[in-house]
Amino acid sequence: MKTGHAAHAPEVMILLQAIIYFLICLAATTAGGISGVGGGVIIKPVLDAVSGMDAATASFLSGCTVLAMTATSMLRSRGGPVRVEKRRGTLLAMGAAAGGVLGKEIFELVRSAGGVTVDIVQQAMMILLTAGVFVYTLNRQKVKTKDVKNAAACVAIGLTLGLLSAFLGIGGGPVNLAVLYYFFSMDSKTAALNSLYVILFSQAASFINTLARGTVPEFDWPVLIAMCAGGVLGGFLGRGISAKLTNRDVDRLFLVIMAVITLISCYSLVRCFV
Image (cartoon, helix red, strand yellow):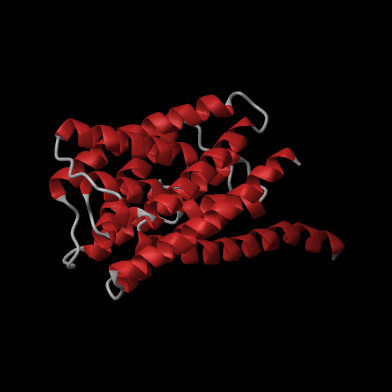
Protein backbone atom coordinates (compact mmCIF):
# COMPACT_ATOMS: atom_id res chain seq x y z
CA MET A 1 0.00 0.00 0.00
CA LYS A 2 2.81 2.37 0.79
CA THR A 3 4.28 1.89 -2.66
CA GLY A 4 0.96 2.73 -4.32
CA HIS A 5 0.48 5.77 -2.11
CA ALA A 6 3.99 7.00 -2.90
CA ALA A 7 3.39 6.54 -6.62
CA HIS A 8 0.24 8.63 -6.51
CA ALA A 9 1.72 11.38 -4.31
CA PRO A 10 3.46 13.26 -7.18
CA GLU A 11 0.25 13.13 -9.25
CA VAL A 12 -1.78 14.53 -6.36
CA MET A 13 0.78 17.33 -5.87
CA ILE A 14 0.67 18.22 -9.55
CA LEU A 15 -3.13 18.32 -9.44
CA LEU A 16 -3.08 20.60 -6.39
CA GLN A 17 -0.53 22.85 -8.10
CA ALA A 18 -2.72 22.98 -11.21
CA ILE A 19 -5.73 24.07 -9.15
CA ILE A 20 -3.74 26.74 -7.33
CA TYR A 21 -2.21 28.08 -10.54
CA PHE A 22 -5.63 28.08 -12.23
CA LEU A 23 -6.98 30.34 -9.47
CA ILE A 24 -3.91 32.60 -9.62
CA CYS A 25 -4.21 32.93 -13.40
CA LEU A 26 -7.95 33.49 -13.25
CA ALA A 27 -7.56 36.37 -10.79
CA ALA A 28 -4.52 37.81 -12.59
CA THR A 29 -5.98 37.73 -16.10
CA THR A 30 -9.36 39.05 -14.98
CA ALA A 31 -7.61 42.05 -13.43
CA GLY A 32 -5.26 42.22 -16.43
CA GLY A 33 -8.14 42.12 -18.88
CA ILE A 34 -9.84 45.03 -17.15
CA SER A 35 -6.76 47.21 -16.77
CA GLY A 36 -4.89 46.19 -19.94
CA VAL A 37 -1.80 44.82 -18.20
CA GLY A 38 -2.49 41.36 -19.62
CA GLY A 39 -2.02 39.39 -16.41
CA GLY A 40 1.53 38.21 -17.01
CA VAL A 41 2.84 41.07 -14.90
CA ILE A 42 1.05 39.43 -11.98
CA ILE A 43 1.51 35.75 -12.88
CA LYS A 44 5.27 35.84 -13.55
CA PRO A 45 6.29 37.50 -10.23
CA VAL A 46 3.91 35.25 -8.28
CA LEU A 47 5.39 32.14 -9.92
CA ASP A 48 8.88 33.43 -9.15
CA ALA A 49 7.91 34.00 -5.52
CA VAL A 50 6.03 30.80 -4.71
CA SER A 51 6.49 28.08 -7.34
CA GLY A 52 10.20 27.23 -7.27
CA MET A 53 10.20 27.13 -11.09
CA ASP A 54 13.26 28.35 -12.96
CA ALA A 55 12.99 31.59 -14.94
CA ALA A 56 12.58 29.84 -18.31
CA THR A 57 9.65 27.67 -17.19
CA ALA A 58 7.91 30.51 -15.35
CA SER A 59 8.29 32.80 -18.39
CA PHE A 60 7.01 30.15 -20.81
CA LEU A 61 3.94 29.23 -18.75
CA SER A 62 3.16 32.88 -18.05
CA GLY A 63 3.52 33.73 -21.76
CA CYS A 64 1.20 30.88 -22.82
CA THR A 65 -1.42 32.00 -20.29
CA VAL A 66 -1.23 35.61 -21.46
CA LEU A 67 -1.50 34.49 -25.09
CA ALA A 68 -4.69 32.55 -24.30
CA MET A 69 -6.09 35.48 -22.32
CA THR A 70 -5.41 38.19 -24.93
CA ALA A 71 -6.85 36.07 -27.76
CA THR A 72 -10.02 35.62 -25.70
CA SER A 73 -10.15 39.33 -24.86
CA MET A 74 -9.89 40.33 -28.51
CA LEU A 75 -12.74 38.01 -29.46
CA ARG A 76 -14.81 39.20 -26.49
CA SER A 77 -14.34 42.88 -27.36
CA ARG A 78 -15.63 42.63 -30.95
CA GLY A 79 -18.57 44.89 -31.52
CA GLY A 80 -18.03 46.72 -28.23
CA PRO A 81 -17.92 50.51 -27.77
CA VAL A 82 -14.14 50.55 -27.27
CA ARG A 83 -12.14 49.64 -30.38
CA VAL A 84 -8.55 48.94 -31.35
CA GLU A 85 -7.07 51.75 -33.43
CA LYS A 86 -6.68 49.83 -36.69
CA ARG A 87 -3.79 51.74 -38.22
CA ARG A 88 -1.66 52.66 -35.22
CA GLY A 89 -2.65 49.59 -33.23
CA THR A 90 -1.64 47.28 -36.08
CA LEU A 91 1.67 49.11 -36.62
CA LEU A 92 2.40 48.78 -32.92
CA ALA A 93 1.45 45.08 -33.05
CA MET A 94 3.76 44.46 -36.02
CA GLY A 95 6.64 46.05 -34.16
CA ALA A 96 5.71 44.07 -31.04
CA ALA A 97 5.82 40.80 -32.98
CA ALA A 98 9.39 41.54 -34.10
CA GLY A 99 10.24 42.68 -30.58
CA GLY A 100 8.80 39.46 -29.19
CA VAL A 101 11.28 37.41 -31.21
CA LEU A 102 14.19 39.70 -30.32
CA GLY A 103 13.29 39.70 -26.63
CA LYS A 104 13.22 35.91 -26.55
CA GLU A 105 16.64 35.76 -28.20
CA ILE A 106 18.07 38.15 -25.59
CA PHE A 107 16.47 36.10 -22.82
CA GLU A 108 18.19 32.95 -24.08
CA LEU A 109 21.54 34.76 -24.28
CA VAL A 110 21.26 36.01 -20.70
CA ARG A 111 20.08 32.60 -19.48
CA SER A 112 23.06 30.91 -21.14
CA ALA A 113 25.30 32.96 -18.84
CA GLY A 114 24.24 30.53 -16.10
CA GLY A 115 23.60 31.00 -12.40
CA VAL A 116 20.77 33.28 -11.29
CA THR A 117 21.75 36.08 -13.67
CA VAL A 118 18.51 36.06 -15.65
CA ASP A 119 16.38 36.02 -12.49
CA ILE A 120 18.22 39.01 -11.06
CA VAL A 121 18.00 40.99 -14.31
CA GLN A 122 14.29 40.23 -14.70
CA GLN A 123 13.39 41.17 -11.13
CA ALA A 124 15.47 44.36 -11.15
CA MET A 125 13.89 45.48 -14.43
CA MET A 126 10.41 44.64 -13.13
CA ILE A 127 10.92 46.79 -10.04
CA LEU A 128 12.23 49.75 -12.03
CA LEU A 129 9.51 49.53 -14.68
CA THR A 130 6.51 49.01 -12.39
CA ALA A 131 7.66 51.66 -9.90
CA GLY A 132 8.29 54.10 -12.77
CA VAL A 133 4.89 53.43 -14.36
CA PHE A 134 3.21 53.82 -10.94
CA VAL A 135 4.78 57.26 -10.44
CA TYR A 136 3.93 58.30 -14.01
CA THR A 137 0.29 57.23 -13.64
CA LEU A 138 -0.08 59.18 -10.40
CA ASN A 139 1.16 62.32 -12.18
CA ARG A 140 -0.38 61.56 -15.55
CA GLN A 141 -2.77 64.51 -15.56
CA LYS A 142 0.16 66.92 -15.21
CA VAL A 143 2.09 65.49 -18.17
CA LYS A 144 1.53 66.89 -21.66
CA THR A 145 0.98 63.93 -24.00
CA LYS A 146 1.83 63.44 -27.67
CA ASP A 147 -0.16 62.08 -30.60
CA VAL A 148 2.32 60.07 -32.68
CA LYS A 149 1.07 59.14 -36.15
CA ASN A 150 4.30 58.39 -38.03
CA ALA A 151 4.33 54.74 -39.15
CA ALA A 152 8.04 54.14 -38.49
CA ALA A 153 7.76 55.62 -35.00
CA CYS A 154 4.75 53.41 -34.23
CA VAL A 155 6.62 50.28 -35.33
CA ALA A 156 9.72 51.29 -33.31
CA ILE A 157 7.63 51.84 -30.19
CA GLY A 158 5.92 48.49 -30.71
CA LEU A 159 9.32 46.82 -31.17
CA THR A 160 10.48 48.14 -27.80
CA LEU A 161 7.29 47.04 -26.07
CA GLY A 162 7.48 43.56 -27.59
CA LEU A 163 11.12 43.17 -26.62
CA LEU A 164 10.41 44.00 -22.97
CA SER A 165 7.32 41.80 -22.99
CA ALA A 166 9.13 38.70 -24.23
CA PHE A 167 12.29 39.17 -22.19
CA LEU A 168 10.42 39.62 -18.92
CA GLY A 169 7.74 37.04 -19.73
CA ILE A 170 5.04 39.39 -18.43
CA GLY A 171 3.10 40.52 -21.48
CA GLY A 172 4.47 44.04 -21.08
CA GLY A 173 1.14 45.51 -19.98
CA PRO A 174 2.22 48.22 -17.51
CA VAL A 175 4.79 49.67 -19.88
CA ASN A 176 2.34 49.39 -22.78
CA LEU A 177 -0.24 51.47 -20.96
CA ALA A 178 2.19 54.21 -19.95
CA VAL A 179 3.47 54.40 -23.53
CA LEU A 180 -0.04 54.47 -25.03
CA TYR A 181 -1.07 57.21 -22.59
CA TYR A 182 1.97 59.36 -23.33
CA PHE A 183 2.73 58.84 -27.04
CA PHE A 184 -0.82 58.36 -28.34
CA SER A 185 -3.00 60.34 -25.88
CA MET A 186 -5.39 57.40 -25.36
CA ASP A 187 -7.88 57.26 -22.50
CA SER A 188 -7.65 54.39 -20.02
CA LYS A 189 -10.13 51.99 -21.67
CA THR A 190 -8.83 52.56 -25.20
CA ALA A 191 -5.24 52.14 -24.01
CA ALA A 192 -6.18 48.93 -22.18
CA LEU A 193 -7.69 47.31 -25.27
CA ASN A 194 -4.88 48.42 -27.59
CA SER A 195 -2.37 47.16 -25.02
CA LEU A 196 -3.97 43.71 -25.11
CA TYR A 197 -3.84 43.78 -28.92
CA VAL A 198 -0.09 44.55 -28.83
CA ILE A 199 0.49 41.85 -26.18
CA LEU A 200 -1.32 39.28 -28.33
CA PHE A 201 1.11 39.79 -31.22
CA SER A 202 4.27 39.95 -29.09
CA GLN A 203 3.39 36.82 -27.13
CA ALA A 204 2.37 34.91 -30.26
CA ALA A 205 5.69 35.76 -31.91
CA SER A 206 7.61 34.82 -28.77
CA PHE A 207 5.75 31.50 -28.51
CA ILE A 208 6.36 30.59 -32.17
CA ASN A 209 10.06 31.49 -31.80
CA THR A 210 10.36 29.24 -28.73
CA LEU A 211 8.85 26.32 -30.65
CA ALA A 212 11.02 26.98 -33.71
CA ARG A 213 14.22 27.11 -31.64
CA GLY A 214 13.31 23.99 -29.71
CA THR A 215 13.86 25.81 -26.40
CA VAL A 216 10.57 24.85 -24.74
CA PRO A 217 11.43 24.20 -21.07
CA GLU A 218 10.23 21.19 -19.09
CA PHE A 219 6.80 21.63 -17.51
CA ASP A 220 3.82 19.60 -16.29
CA TRP A 221 0.98 19.49 -18.83
CA PRO A 222 -1.81 19.66 -16.20
CA VAL A 223 -0.28 22.89 -14.91
CA LEU A 224 -0.07 24.46 -18.39
CA ILE A 225 -3.66 23.43 -19.23
CA ALA A 226 -4.96 24.77 -15.91
CA MET A 227 -3.13 28.08 -16.32
CA CYS A 228 -4.35 28.60 -19.89
CA ALA A 229 -7.90 27.72 -18.83
CA GLY A 230 -7.62 30.37 -16.14
CA GLY A 231 -6.34 32.81 -18.77
CA VAL A 232 -9.25 32.13 -21.15
CA LEU A 233 -11.85 32.53 -18.40
CA GLY A 234 -10.06 35.60 -17.04
CA GLY A 235 -9.99 37.22 -20.47
CA PHE A 236 -13.71 36.58 -20.87
CA LEU A 237 -14.59 37.97 -17.44
CA GLY A 238 -12.15 40.89 -17.63
CA ARG A 239 -13.59 42.37 -20.80
CA GLY A 240 -17.14 41.93 -19.51
CA ILE A 241 -16.37 43.71 -16.24
CA SER A 242 -14.39 46.44 -17.99
CA ALA A 243 -17.47 47.42 -20.01
CA LYS A 244 -19.23 48.30 -16.74
CA LEU A 245 -16.41 50.39 -15.25
CA THR A 246 -15.37 54.02 -15.76
CA ASN A 247 -11.92 55.15 -16.85
CA ARG A 248 -11.31 56.29 -13.26
CA ASP A 249 -12.12 52.81 -11.94
CA VAL A 250 -9.67 51.27 -14.43
CA ASP A 251 -6.95 53.71 -13.32
CA ARG A 252 -7.46 52.81 -9.65
CA LEU A 253 -7.21 49.09 -10.35
CA PHE A 254 -4.08 49.67 -12.41
CA LEU A 255 -2.37 51.54 -9.56
CA VAL A 256 -3.21 48.80 -7.07
CA ILE A 257 -1.76 46.17 -9.43
CA MET A 258 1.45 48.19 -9.89
CA ALA A 259 1.95 48.58 -6.14
CA VAL A 260 1.41 44.87 -5.48
CA ILE A 261 3.71 43.74 -8.29
CA THR A 262 6.50 46.09 -7.20
CA LEU A 263 6.38 44.57 -3.70
CA ILE A 264 6.33 40.98 -5.02
CA SER A 265 9.25 41.71 -7.35
CA CYS A 266 11.24 43.19 -4.46
CA TYR A 267 10.60 40.00 -2.48
CA SER A 268 11.66 37.80 -5.43
CA LEU A 269 14.84 39.85 -5.98
CA VAL A 270 15.84 39.42 -2.33
CA ARG A 271 15.26 35.65 -2.66
CA CYS A 272 17.77 35.55 -5.54
CA PHE A 273 20.52 36.48 -3.08
CA VAL A 274 19.40 34.30 -0.17
